[in-house]
Length: 137
Image 1: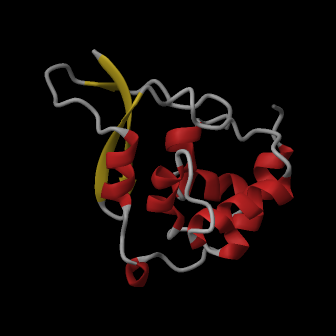
Image 2: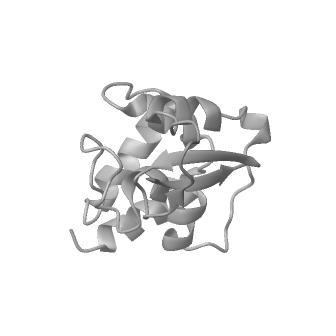
């Protein structure tokens, strides 16, 4: 049996491998690669959810799908080349999220992030950045 996690992004179920230890039934199609996940998760900006002002950083981390690639603890990523976020400087993390969303940063694995950054508003990015900075690396 393969391990994976089902992530629902705006009504579309995606299977991501080796995250959170949820097992997928054997014989099913292999999980999508991260770039395919980013493409499948991409939704036009006009369909993006409204800001969630009542959610704290931990809740946003789960709801905005950060957990799917960066892990529940923000340091156990689904691929070794994905950054471990726990303990990252808040201002640096905030700027990286803004740059990826705007397209100012488009190197490395930013294609996977670009596919989901439309889900996150700037005030939510700040709360996410503060949350991951508060985690133990």
